[in-house]
Length: 90
Image 1 (cartoon, one colour):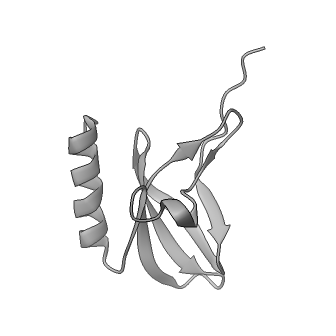
Image 2 (spheres, one colour; image 1 turned 45 degrees about the horizontal axis):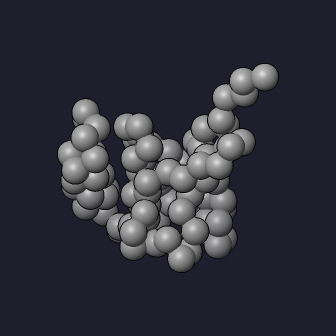
């Protein structure tokens, strides 16, 4: 049986909700919001996966596979850098 991996579109961690606003391959920008919906920042991540589902990098992987930004402009610059260096077409 060939099952498709569950795609990461949103997740919750450390008291925040994260929603994917841009993705190319395994590179993504997630908007970070409080549980009341107030936006507070952006996370640029290299999506990780196991055999069943995708997930955000662990705390230990942060700085290598995940970066936090307060401004969308800075998050988009990191996202473009990752895509270009990883060979993804943006």
